[in-house]
Length: 380
Image 1 (cartoon, one colour):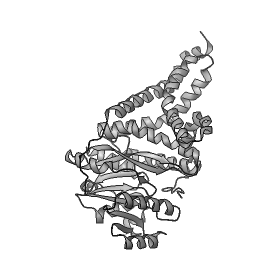
Image 2 (cartoon, helix red, strand yellow):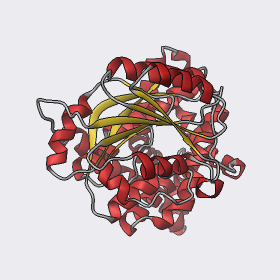
Image 3 (cartoon, rainbow, N blue to C red):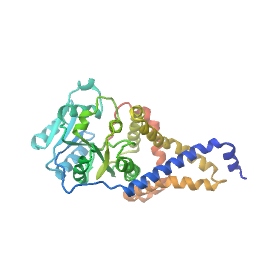
Image 4 (tube, rainbow, N blue to C red):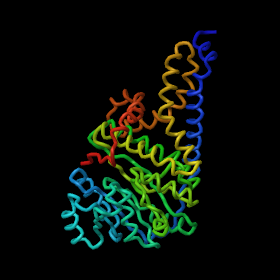
């Protein structure tokens, strides 16, 4: 019996991160595969007419070009839909947005007073103000980030179908578009794979957003928005909203609508974006119901445990090549997403970085302590 096997049998604690990583990853892959195959959103042959868009934006020069790109796309594709733009008092682009709203009756500007909610910062503060003063119960509000482009109108056909069944919220499929950083764009395709698999299983097939919801496009019925307490302080408001919907027993669906999201322009911004999400999750997890806590903690822990598992496998590989097989299976899902991203980028040389892409995501944890508030990345 070789040295590697002896080490593992005499120190069984070494096997814990391996078995944990493999078993949880297999479960998520199987659930994701089932969601991908079994779920297809329902729809009616006609469109909903009770839909309005809401873009909450910092409205500064960092986002001006992408904001205009998003607004132009919305006005072109959804000509008869109201688009609300919600900004904080004193935002740089208020004069510019004012001029746009004067010339377009479907574009409406909302300015959140500085003193609202004690001057808190963040997207949820603006959402709270908008819901308090502008929301109608019978209208569906589609919240969008200021760099996103809606690529189809499938959700308009789905809303009448799910509204009849009592569903109250939906999410799209996120699809990255190129930025200045090819590597960030490549890694961002992992979110697309997640949407087609595990998010489709929970948000769509089960109708319970146990992994949370995307804030990039979040559609919610007005009557439900009015029920929610949006006075909390959070930098991951989409997760908190998902937690409230789960606690109240509300159902969700995953739309076949695809939303183009702008990838970060640098690896630093990519990591800061991920670190902001992780820090917000640490703060907000305590407000989630038990099932959601357990699932999110396990999935998030995989980031760290995978590093340990890989180290163990690589260390013992020369003596125990059979330990590589289950790791290869668990890694296939992640690497497939990264390879797909490389193909979409048309920069084949980035294939060499595929085995290390997960390290870039995991190392985002080191930037958690740099996050003091909602981090705004350069999007133009």
